[in-house]
Amino acid sequence: MDPELASPTAAVLVVGTELTSGLRPDTNGPNVARALEDAGYDVRSVTALPDDADAIASFLTRALPGHRLIVVTGGLGPTHDDVTREAAARALGRTLTCDEGVLRSLGPAVARHGCAEAGARVLRQAEIIDGARILMPTLGTAPGQVLEHEHGTLALLPGPPHEMGPMLGVLLDDRPGHASPRILRTIGHPESDIQLLVEGALAGSSGMAFTILASPGLVDVILRDGGAGETALDAAARAAAVALGDACYSTDGSTLAEAIMDAAERLGLRICTAESCTGGMVASALTDVAGSSAAFAGGVVAYADAVKSTVLGVSSATLEAHGAVSAETAIAMAEGARMRLGADIAVAITGIAGPTGGSAAKPVGTVWLAIATPADTHAERRMLPGDRDGVRIRATVAALGLLLRAVRPAAGPGVDV
Image (cartoon, rainbow, N blue to C red; front, side):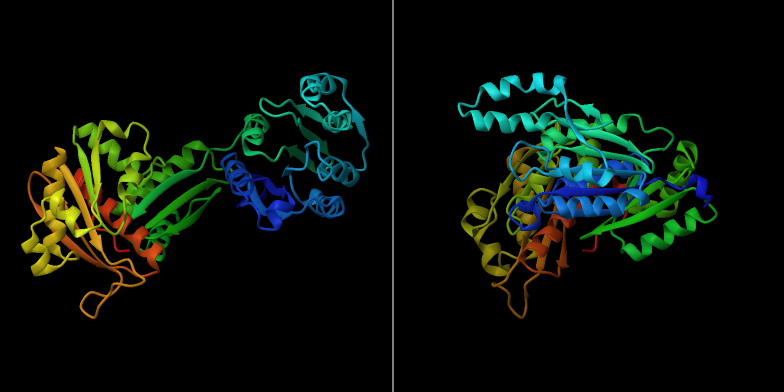
């Protein structure tokens, strides 16, 4: 690739002792990195540091020369351990000055404190590094600061995600010249196969790169612009989608559940679920989609055999003869749900998620799924690896795969998870 077309490099630094000590998970790092990648940056690192001015200043001193953009979140508040401003000023060799406009904006926050010392600490947030562009908060009180320096840009943003997010959007709004990533989502094929197919489709292309992201039963392909531009990236995405064939169920970034609900709504179909070992995870995935009420009729979590019988109509004879984890029970669950909930399509899951409950005939990881449509009902067995959570997640993906085939027959083979 021509170096002139290479994406500008970026780094993310999240500041907070609560993050480095494990008291709170870091969400800013992944979210900021994803936003930077979408804006055309090549994110080289996501780093977490405690509220330690020396550590922050040392990191920035090393990182500033090698990155076009560094985004720092956290440490801009009023408390004693909010030291990002001071550390950044030291790394840049600049001073801090109290900004009168920010000072005035902090008046209401100061007034809410009965203690004069607490109010004075609020005013620390008016300390601005010389030469900074100020990003006034829409929520909270800490302003962001954007500083241009000889190597690029340093942005200091607040730590709370609801305060940081709007400022990050303002920071990246002016980023020109790069296309947003194209996301192709696939089901039912190993990531190595997907990678080879995409590599073949993109052979000879320049100014772009792709990343493979795999999860149980699903593989996403992220095509990133490295200078090729919108038209070339669109052409590459089309070529990759053709190479992936029926494995590719989404070319616009839609999730599996979104693709199912979109197709069902367009076709006027109603979907329902009957779940045992997944405990409602399939219904949850479908109802996470905004507007899902247009196509989702409802779901039944039938964990106990008595609920399978009384609510879904699975006969005691079926349960006694074949057991709760069987093709016959899965079929009866799907047909019962479809009839009782007035849906066009029903998916049912029954299995042994573990860690106990397995046997030689039906070991942990045995899952039966059934799909009932106006045309027919059929069941499929899966032997799923992993611990309890892993089996449940894979079973959920497998069920969604069956639903996808039911609403989009061209979606290809069932998912092997």
